[in-house]
Image (tube, rainbow, N blue to C red; front, side, top):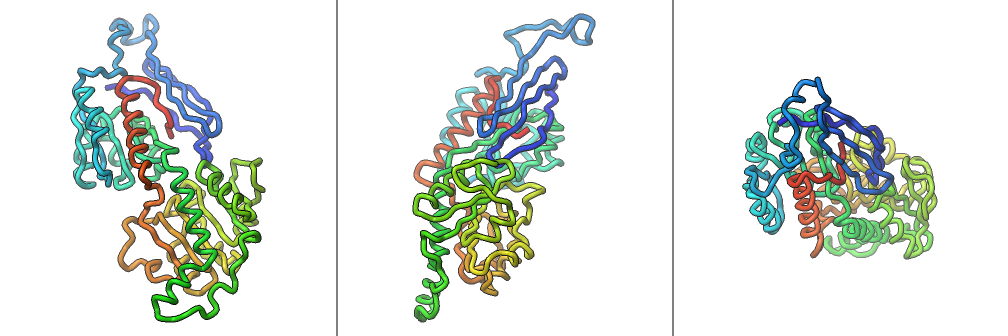
Length: 383
């Protein structure tokens, strides 16, 4: 199958804003883009090749667009390793279109099945690297369950002409409330109190350095959907909230620079994408520059924090606590220093989960597969 060229777009913000652009290749016209915080749309239309252009004698049949797949087509929908209770939604969609649903039992099986996949549905438990895309000659779209896509080499997907669509917004409230709960628990020194009881001790000096809620200074890094939720939650209980986001200048909370936000907060809550600019953003030097007694919450991407440096800062007492739901390597290693660091609340990447979020996530992914299978414009594209 000849795929259209897809151009990578320069510039994105934490809420996924992208600029409008257009490219034509092989008789295919592609428009892409979004306004801030809107859904990104890819529109593909086939045009008649002009007379005299190679291939123009093939003719054109509106009913036989090669970018439209019918319910009688045969193909494979590949699902990466997952922890969903079931794949009933995905199976129903595959059956409707006469496709085979192929769930991969592990990452090796996932990679081996890539050459036969017409659609790839990827979870956080697998990766698509630059070396994978040359074999994906049948693939029409990659659908990422969730909003993070640092496990996909998007540049390689773009080079291969494969659109990558994400599924944002299905668990914003869940993730925000998880971060909020962690931040308040740490600010109130609950892990230290719990450890004292478990060690057959008592209060000692625990809590003497805790700010009252009305004077608690909270720094939110990243004002996308989840960051805004978190900021509103803290503001609602009377905390003083400031935020940093290089793409946002006006908000319902005070906006400040990165150094100001990091250096003047009792709670630092991270809600950023992982990219070249944000990898290991919370480094040894940054931790040292933070106010003594600060607590850090990360429910976004694990690579934002130098985890070894954070464990050291917790052990020294300079950082009073950390709430971490996402880690640079998952599952967390048995000998990882954060496991033994004091005053840490560690959860296994479950901030997004609730009694509704799993179904909403799968519904969103299935919706995007349906768009791809019927030749409709894809939404929430990242390339």
